[in-house]
Image (cartoon, rainbow, N blue to C red; front, side, top):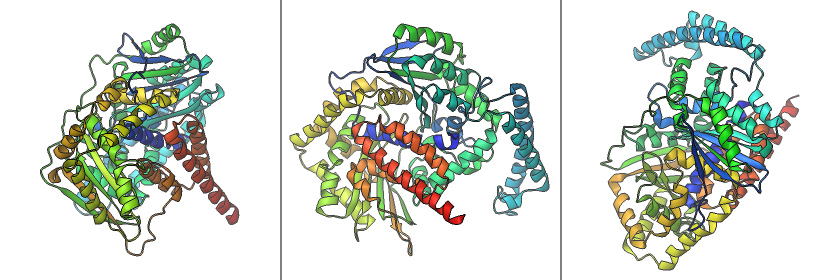
Length: 594
């Protein structure tokens, strides 16, 4: 398994977690509470334990309470970079000669410091207009070329003493599955499923990579992240425009830079900066672990103290994000042309995670979404101006947004979709919301609750995800607060937040002469709110040209598919089908070239 490929899948898992939040899957309803036992070590690390003795495995993982919002200009993307680096091994895993390994890393850092000084001069030349791009290969100086040759020699020497992917191999040999990680604006989580009789291996492996990580191939992996950015953002039809829209929407908050980071920062982040970031945000008192499956609680407590108890406590809480979003005073609007299906997004500033109004906004999304929801009925079925339409509340740790999005059908325009959305808003505010319609949304919340709580993997993910946002107890209070939402509450939040001067609008038109976006007809089988994230993933797949990388991703998806709750299982099947087709296409091309 290559780290590059294995790091790709979490975008699907994180997208699914966002969808879980948006459509109310997996939140305990009524008496369907999650019986969590909490353990806190002396060093401040917390464990959330849910024993399931009828299982044969344990879904295990931990969340670092750090994401891109904790970064600063100059090191954007560093949180996501750690998602890659912590699979490189430790002082005991990943090398045949740790002493020389560490010496090489020090020598590499000395060379990189000299290269960073050259980049400083190159940026000055760029500011004076002497060069177009400070990072372009053709603008490298003779000194930089020499330094890079010396650095590459050290890279090759280090690789000669590395045991590649040993972290993965140890787990796989023990029967573990689904090892991966994911980064959002607010958190970074690491997860795996292990056989119940291999749980102590998990405690040793995870505590080892937290207590003695070795940042092997730091700069090579930084380049991998740069390439990942190109695939996810620059090589997709709307990727760069979506990024621009996000940055435009968030005026002052750190949410205005992408999780993957700005490209100029990814060129110059240093290992020293990474070491300082790790010591600050990966201290024991900034971590929470979650275990769901077949284990003895008393034994787990002993293992937790034995292995994770050795992690240092930073002595103080990690720095909080203190820059709040400025109140928007005027509408923001963006119009773009791309090789895509014409579409629109209308987004409003709302509220963060667990805010009192977030529950009414979730219910509003429930009224709008789904095949019986207002958007599908009005735009897809009745007026036939949309191929798909969705709405959702995104409650992040420090701020929130409510978005409407739709793709055109036939000759419809983005403006027609936008006007259709405003018409629906007026109905919400001005007309009575039938009691039976509101109750149907609430019934859906209750019906989904038990189903998803049965799945250890997704339950563990939710415990980590919500704890990373601020409080895992959200799982046990969400339903009661949501079921208490009234029609008047829904009208109130719609009127309060969906004002013209509080919105940002992005209209995407098809570029002249382009073929347009592929329809991916299978997506029509899914709930509308699932279609957008999956469509973006499928577009990324089409830009990938390495069949081995795709094969690794396929294996990851096959593992996760068996654990996915019903609303998401079909999404994984569609992804699997497209990956198989892409692999076959690439191998056919290879055969024809030989």
